[in-house]
Image 1 (cartoon, rainbow, N blue to C red):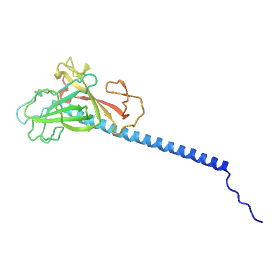
Image 2: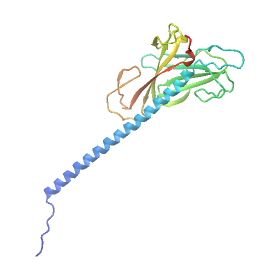
Image 3: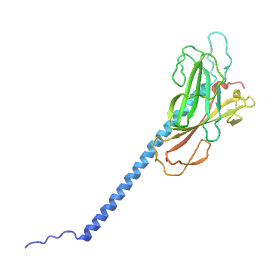
Length: 247
């Protein structure tokens, strides 16, 4: 007996297409969401790497500030120049930081220039190029300490750095412990620690949704229209050459 062949009705076809479109929409939404999460995690990792690098470079220079290279003959008891200093940029403006210390043969400034004669002065001047969001350092090597001024522009150490803020821990009574943190010490010789904050942003735009982030002052700030990921990194460093065992 012949058999009659039957296909899908129009209603069944429409229902099947609707289910397929819903499944495609769900799969597409999961893919886009997963891709966004991956981008955010990737940018967050790079921001963290940038923050660690910036603090490592600045912190190393602060720890060396005021170092005296002991000669084979004679005796040096202290660094004769200004070991650490800086300028307070004020609200919304990045600070600057300058460190000085005596270098040994093989040491180098932040631009890679090496010391060829022990005892020469290494000067590292850190500042932010606000227009390009770059952390810069100008390194100089001289025979004697100088009176630090506003740091000149120098070599780019790290891109996507929007802010640099420094608070100085001041010892007012000579017990080698911090009595207060201030932005502009009256006497740079009283500084025993420095608290450094850098604000790092992601390279890519449109990474995060609208909202707020915490800046270097701890203030909740609205995310700009570029929607970059931003994070403030803070660390406190001792001036090791200002501390000894006999206050």
